[in-house]
Image (cartoon, rainbow, N blue to C red):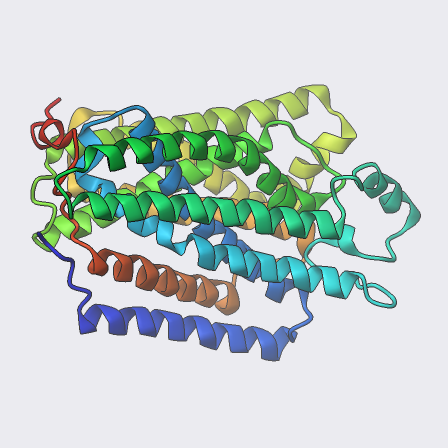
Length: 401
């Protein structure tokens, strides 16, 4: 059995990245102080972005169980490791929501919060818009939903990982596999419903006077895609370390195919929502795109063009989907541009036109990268990365397309 060695050099690198994040955090405190919207909006942005990567990987792993897919068995440990960041991300998101609730529900309320609907003293027009959603958007219910739904996500992911590890320690592994199959089915159904709730609560609620029936699915695809991209990058990293030697070009072809397909689906969902809003021109809907096109025009269009056209052009051919160099370059670029997408989910509704991508934003993103890598690589180092017992392991070993 092969274990990933989380070397001292690699640990030092993650410590340096996290240290840069701490410096950026201190810079944010000094320059904007702890009460600023920019400070908390950026923390929410990073926590949501990396939490969504974990959720996407867990969902993809669950999908492989339910589909009884054989090819992906070789990379199952990677999905599991990426999912280990989930509880940390959820805690940080919950903290941002609690801070907004405390500041907004103070004696005089505060406009200087991420979730402006939590503000006690908003103007009359804004109150009327928010009041229509008050049965759903009220502080106790939102916080309770986050705790319960997030807790169930973490519990189900941990159960599947624990059983997966136990399978390698016993010859009687079939009962454990079928239990995981059922747990994965429960997870997919539960996640398919509750992911919409969290999309509304964590992201859409930043622009509380806007509504969309498609945004939750758009966000779902973004989670799935970024989870696959990180899985691809980690798999290539492990192969270069001499691990996952049974992962061949055919497995990478499948992963690259998922990157390509989900990028096209992302573009379809984005464009469908954009064109539908433009055609109907309903004020409660177009306000979302108006704010982003008017004040975030440059990164808005760069994000869209790169996220759609780059994989559509480069990953179209069979050879590029089987080439590690192409997958690393395209995957890395897409992670950056999907981070830009996440940036314009959060910032227009929270800080408005006074946005900036400076030392604080970049430093905090680097710090979260270090934190994320530390958690994921630590998880990889604790268990063998090569699956030993699985009913479809032979199919995965001889996978060919």
